[in-house]
Structures are given as C-alpha cells and as structure tokens.
Length: 464
Ligand code: ADP
Ligand code: MG
Image (tube, rainbow, N blue to C red):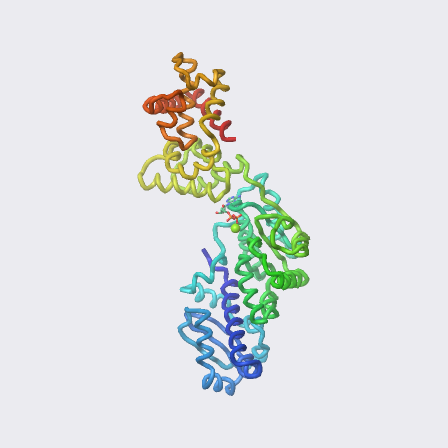
C-alpha cells in the first residue's frame, strides 16, 4: 500500500481550513484578518507542524497572545502534532492567503512521508492507492470490457476525452480497481499530472466542513492544480439540497477548468437516488460505462489469473467449482481462493474439491438455499427418467436406487438440511441410509468419469 500523497496533503489542508474557520468564529472577522489570515501552512513533518507568517511583528503577536488558541484548534484536528513551528517567510505569495498558494510551496513528498507515519488512520480511509490494482492485474471479459477500455483511454490521454467518466456496477466488480489503475498509469506515464483519488464520503466530509466554515472558495481552490479528480462511490452523496447545490457548482467549475473527472457509483446516473435531477443528468454527460455481473467465463479467467500468483497448486476442477458456485463478485472469489490456499498451506494438504466444499460452506450457502429437496428429486427423476414417487418409494431395483442415492447426495450437498431430515423426505428412511448413499456417490464420482460428469451436470442445472 502506498499513501496517495495528494490526499494526505489535502487532509492537512482541510484541517487547516477547519482550524481557521473555528478561529475566525472565535475571534471575529477583524482580529482574524489582522493576525490569522496572514498565516500559511508550510508542512507537517515528523509530527512537527510548520506555519509561516510574513513578518516578525505578526509572529510576536501570535506567540504572545494567540499561540494557545492556535495550538488547541490544531490539536483538535490532528492528534499527531507534537510540535509547532512558526517561521517568517517574506515571500509575497505566502501572504496571498489561500490554502492553495501556500500548499504550492510544500514539498509534498516530504509531507507525505511524514504524514503517513502514525497519522490518524481514521482520517485516511479510502485514500490510499492499492499497488495491486493495476491495469495488468485486471482481467478483461465481456462484462467489463467497455469500462476497461474507457479507463485506459482516460489514463493514456493527455487531454480530457470525455467528462466525466462515469463507472458503475455492483459491489466488488472492479470499479475501485479501475480507478486506482488509472491513477497508477497516469503517474507512470506522466508524473507531472496530478491525480487525486478519494471516496465520495471523504469528499463530502471535506466539502461540508468547508461549507460550515464558509470556505468553499478555498475548497475549490484545492483542486485547481489537479488534473484528474476521482470520486469513488458517489451513491453516498445525497441528502441536503444546499450541499448538492454547492457540489453541483464545484463539479461544473472543475469541468469548466478542463479537469478530468472520474466518478463511480453502484447505479447509473439516472438510477441514483437522492440526487437532484440536474446533477443526475450532468453526471451522464460524459461517458457512462457499466460493469455487468460476471459471466462464468470471466469468473474462471479471474480465478486462473489469481491462482497463478499463489504458490499452492490449485486443481482445475476446484477453480471450475468455484467459478460455478461463487457468482456474486470478484471480492468473494478472491476470498474463497485465499481461504483454501491459506488452509492448504497451514495443514500442508493438497487442495481438492472436498476440502474446498468444507471450507467454503458458509460462502456456498447462499446458493444452496435456493435449491430444495423437492427440486432436487424432480430434476434427478427427470434426468434418469424415473418417477418422482420412486424417490420415496420402497422399490429397490437398481434403476431407481442409484438416482435416489444421487438425489440424497445432492440434498446433502446443495441444501442445509440435516441427514435425518433428508432421510424423512426420501420415504422415511433412516439417516444411515443417507450416509451410505452419500458415500456411495462420492466413491462412484471418484472412479467413474462419466458418472461424475452426470452428477456435475445435475449440480449445474440445479444451480442455474
Ligand atoms: P468495487 O469497487 O466495484 O466494489 P473493487 O474494485 O474493490 O470493486 O474490486 C474488488 C476486488 O476484486 C479487488 O480486489 C479487485 O482487485 C478485484 N477485481 C475486480 N475486478 C477484477 C478483474 N476484472 N480482474 C481482477 N481482479 C478484479
Ligand atoms: Mg469500490
């Protein structure tokens, strides 16, 4: 994990904006203008916060009368400050007191290094760039090819190909991955372009803070030197109209300044709730690219790619099993893979289907719940061309015994019913009969390929 330096940088700036707002409220406009307005933020370095003032006169006054006030408010914002430094900087631009003009002077790499150590983690949520979220680690298939192509296009363009790029899709389908990939790629190809990535919640948090301190101008200023602004999960931006109004203006201002905006959400702009119509249509002006639910093929390709990266060997049939069973999203696929590789390396066993099944029982349950014993009996009887009633009859001819055993086996594996319950549903049979059936079917699956395929086919049909 690396910290996104701009973000931390913004974080300190936002704190500074909050401190100034509070102080202004406390001391009133006149005093604020004389003594605090000329102060600029220089750096936050190993716990040392450095501020600058344009002359000795102001410095003396601050030290004499306002240092505690200043410190208290800073401590409230940032618990990691251990020391304060006020330096005199005669440079004119420092007196031009926007957050922006002072920040230009800060060596952001130094700032970043120090800020990321021991800095209040809660303040940093959602701001770091994941090193693994690159284009090369992103597996492309039908469901995500448009989003992927659009993301690449934005990353490789020197200008703004479409504004905004609006990525949407269900949870765990790669939106954040693509956004980080864009950021990595831009930094690699064109390090002078400035990219800011932040969650919508963070964005709103800063924004509302700025609103409260009537400092939205400073807020917008922060983005002036940015080339690409990414806001993740905008479905969380909703609510108060006044906030949205300001957000709308900020958004437009950034677009007007030719900043590339990249927005993600779980729904299309039209379907976003709690967002003004005007904003909704504005969000759809650029390119709207959705990521569709994963197909079996894409799930399998992703599993192949991820499996290649781990040391443990994962058999093909296990990967296929996972691709069949875990249909929701990539995050769950990864979770499943991690769990079985971790287990296998801990106990030193090779990975196989049974182990996978046991380990992932809870994950698989959701798909199991959809199938019930009756459906299994119906499907199996159809498949083997026997009567449904023979599932519970006392008949013992081989033609019905085997299908019945398979149905019991499937009931055991595809539902959460207990062995006695399953026995009851198959003509009041004893649970030991069910155990016997399960063992028999497992044995046959292991020794008879065409039998195994038959069962596999039934499982697929039942789960689709
Ligand atoms: P979202 O932001 O849409 O909820 P994420 O981008 O956080 O989803 O993706 C969840 C996880 O799945 C991440 O670990 C990500 O790397 C991975 N992932 C998603 N899509 C793909 C893909 N097409 N190829 C490889 N990994 C993917
Ligand atoms: Mg995300």
